Length: 189
Image (cartoon, rainbow, N blue to C red):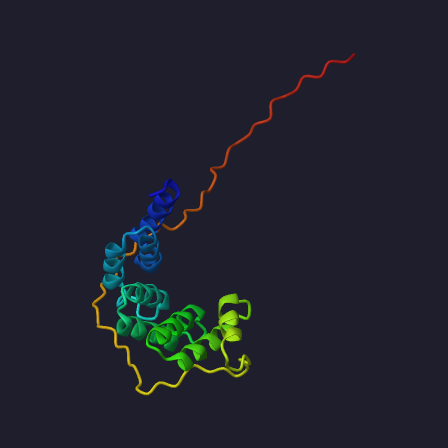
């Protein structure tokens, strides 16, 4: 592992140790550094603690996709879209999943959403232009699902951490000092 990656990983780990909300960032860096089993563990241990944090679902979904666990990846990515329907990365990954499943039409629909949400995404635009389909993505909508997918996070008991009490500021009051003028002797010139 390169020195720069070690530094990034150490920083991410430090952030995660201070605040578990950094779990997705830390797991993403771990996966990038080749430590995917540890990334999976971090994600699985924390994803239910922060059920509205779509980044955790994206990172875990991408890891499942790399392992060809299509159903798990699809469930997580669609769950992320239910929370944030403008998530370009989720649409891109779902396009890949649909392509892997042989659903070309659905894959192109997801790419149209990518192109609509991010007009500068060259990959999506190029694939759409090369397809024999209409490239107009005005009014593009996500493909309609045959069966609704419901993502139910498992309940996790979260115990609040004690908050450190901060002392209230104390106003310093100066003590009065008595100044006695000394007589000045003036000599005539």
